Amino acid sequence: MNVSRLKKPEPILFCDASSGIYIPQRFANEVKQSCVVGVSSFQFEVLASGPDNELYWDTWTDVLNNAIVKDKKTGVVYTVHQNDDLWLLPVNYSGPLRD
Image (cartoon, rainbow, N blue to C red; front, side):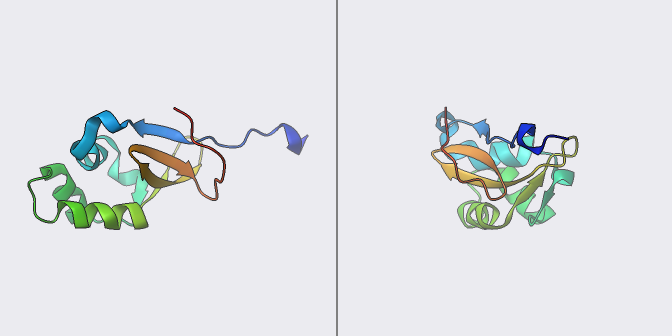
């Protein structure tokens, strides 16, 4: 097998900045919890409840710092990164983000 032909996993744009303060809520509602480690069911509930929850932003910070998302089809493991847009970045990814 020619290892140089293997394609490296690319970042995934989960949602763009137009979702604003609802990005954490979208993450909680749209990602499969079974694919995420480092985030408790309670944290998912807090985020799903929306930005009026007093724990929303602290919980989101914890998720950004601790969540690991695994694509069960490909086995690729991602971290969660927000720079206005919300990205799933392959672990150890160091390249540019494109829109």
